[in-house]
Amino acid sequence: MKIRTVLVLLLISAEVALAPPMSVQVRSAKVRATASQLATVVTTVDYGVVVEARALDKGWYPVTTRDGKTGWLHESALSKKPIAMRSGTSDAATGVSSDEVAIAGKGFNEQVEQKLRTDGTFDFTWVDKMSAITVTEEQIQAFRQEGHLPGGAQ
Amino acid sequence: MRNERSILTSGPDKDAAHQGGRSWRRCIVWAVCLAVLSGLYAAVRLTAESEAAGRGAARGQRAGFLTEDRVDSILRGVKALEKTWQDLTPEQEYYIGRAVVASVLQTYRPLDRPQANAYLNLLGQSLAVFSNRPETFGGYHFLLLDSDEVNAFAAPGGLILVTRGMLRCCENEDELAAVLAHEIGHVELKHGLSAIKQGRLNSALTIIATESAKQLGNEQLVSLTQTFEASVQDIATTLLSKGYSRKQEQEADAAAVRLLRRAGYPDRSIITMLNRMDKQLGRSRGLGFDKTHPSAKSRADGLRKIVRDTGPVADEVRRQRFVNAMMPVIAGQ
Image (cartoon, each protein chain N blue to C red):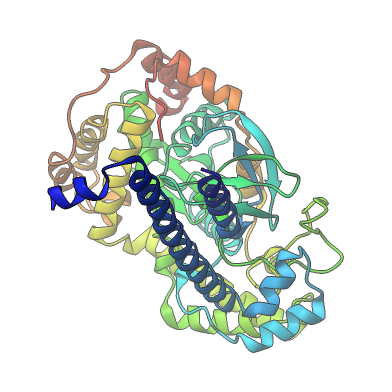
């Protein structure tokens, strides 16, 4: 019996060790209590932050954040590739604001957009306006409830 | 065989001996399992690390930090590993999408109707959470266009535009949900990015791969901006003139049906919307949506095979809130 307990513990440790580190690849991702986009938000993780992810389950990873919080992140929010950060900006380990975090060495970024703005190639006024339209989780829940929309399963 | 077993397991001593033997056999099996798991773990980790620009980068990343010098040296060693549009990151896709919308807005005027745009975003974002790709770098956002042309556009990263003419093809919220679900399908499947010409992508990714981690030098910035602009143009041309392939449209329709079902909308609303669109387009053949999409009738016919034609019926509350938010826009008031 003891041997079995030890082996089970070893297996659990092996599973934990197998959890690969993954990086958040979107500006901000919500860690949910269950594997659903409508589930309660446990915490949010910013771009570039590393989380420990266990086996993918129907599009969702059970994750543990650096500060020990557990929950679920949709696979579209995570990247297996490490996202390198510029020095002097965010550090995933400390959870510093990631406003200035970028994928080091990658183009098609804010600097390029800024050049298009200053050159007068494109006008981003309405792009900014539409991007600023926010919808809260509470509004989505209320909208669905009011509209008698059933389900909610992913 | 059965007899041998009964003989071996008869008597308390033999039982104990047998159980001891079984425990050891189990130990060996578990140990082998652990060894295999450890081996697999090492192999997976090594592969992942080498793919991610070397073990040093991965170790540095796990530590949560890479210095500029370290990143520079890593990047020098991974020249142009990325070769296809699928390798563009969500962040790059986001900036491309923003410029694509800015480009489309050179042709179409935005419709400055806060109430209607708020409703459009509420409906669109309520749907997007049920997509196979609910998370994009900057999220999903929707905007109405002041045009009588029947059209809708999905820019990479989740920026979606819908014309007033397209609204006129929708009689209720369920049908507008079908339009948005189709466009979300294009975003989910990254159809916009696939419109970037391969040659353009090669030069872009070569510049990106050899680029410094620091701010771009002026020469690099000019070069990258030109490539970026041309990539945006490739996508805008597809959205405005060429259209996606028939296969991509079918994929987006199938994604829309799945999305509607998940979100609780009747999936047949996509067929009723397409039928209305077909009639609407009868008045303007060869323009707008008709120019860039397979015929609405052929799409509706194709969808009949997968639409269940069951599920909830049109709801009065949903119909009324659609009317309240969109009727003034549809009427051109």
